[in-house]
Image 1 (cartoon, helix red, strand yellow):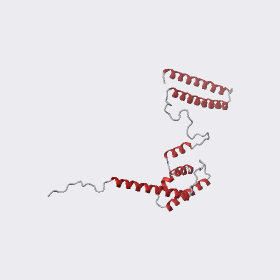
Image 2 (spheres, rainbow, N blue to C red):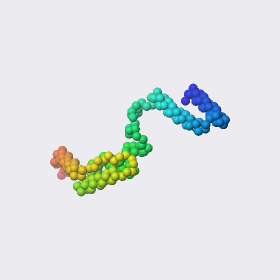
Image 3 (spheres, one colour):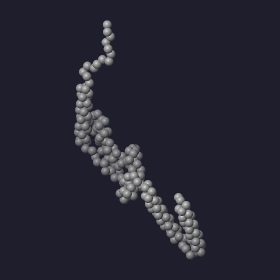
Image 4 (cartoon, helix red, strand yellow):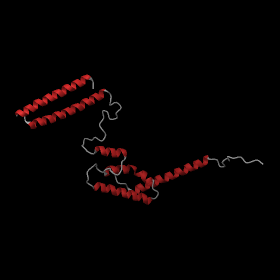
Length: 201
C-alpha cells in the first residue's frame, strides 16, 4: 500500500467512525430505530465486502496476476448453478482418487473407470463373474439408498458380455507375449559364443 492509499484508508476509517458516533447519538435521542440501524449496517457491510472483492479482482487483473490461470474468464468446473455445500470435498475426492470416504456415486464412478484393469488382473472366469456380480449389486443398492449426495449414474455391467471382453483381452495378451518371446528367440544366436578361450595344450 503506497502513501496515497494509506492516507485514503485513514480518511475512510475516520469518516466511518464519525458516522458511527452520529448514529449512536441519534439512537440515544430516540430519533432512530435501533433495529433499522442494525439492518442498514448489515447491508452496508455486505456492500463493502462486495466492493472490496470487486476492487481486489480488478487490481489483480491490472497487475496480470490472472495470466496463465486456466480458469481465467471461464466458469469454474463443476459449477452448474446449483448450490452444493460439499462441492469442494467431492472435487478433491474425485481429483485425487481418494477411496473409502467418497459418496457412493463418486466411489462407484471411480471403480467403474478402473474396473477393466482390475478384471484383467484376474486369472479365472469365475473370479471375473464374482467381481462383476458384486459390482452390480452395489450399484443397485446405491440407487435404492436415499442418503442425498450426487445421483448414481454408473451403469450396470452385463456379466456375460464383460466375461467375453475379458477373455478376448486375455487371449490378446497371451498372443502378444508369445510373439514377443518368439521374436526375442529369433534375435538371439542359436549357439552363443563362449566368453572364455579354451586352454591350449
